[in-house]
Structures are given as structure tokens and as C-alpha cells.
Image (tube, rainbow, N blue to C red; front, side, top):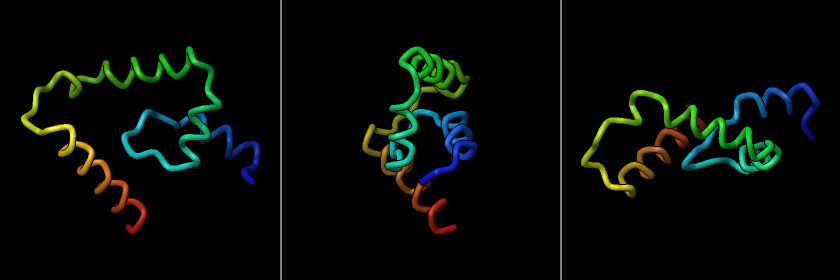
Length: 74
């Protein structure tokens, strides 16, 4: 079980992810809908969200999964 401060930190840092962990899914679900929308808007307002790419959605998902695997093992 998470402590209250750890839960609060987790909620403060949670962002949309292509490959969320179970804990991230739970934390995201605990956010109010308006806060989820605000976080999506902030994510999509970043300059790199306006760059075009030839990568397919499968390429992007594979790269995201690779980054997650590296974080878990590194």
C-alpha cells in the first residue's frame, strides 16, 4: 500500500502514457476529469507535438515500450 505522500507525489507527476504501468493507470483514474484534460492539453501543447514524422503508430508504440523496458532494467 502506498503512503499518502507517495500517492500525492504519484498523482502530481502522472502524465498520459502509451505504456502505463498498473500503478500509473490507477493514479490516472483517481484524477478528476478536468485535470486529466488539462494534462492532455499540456502534453499536446509541447513544441515537439507539432513535428511530423514518417513513423507509424506501431513504430511509436514500439519505441515507447523500449523506453519503458530500459527504465525498468536500467
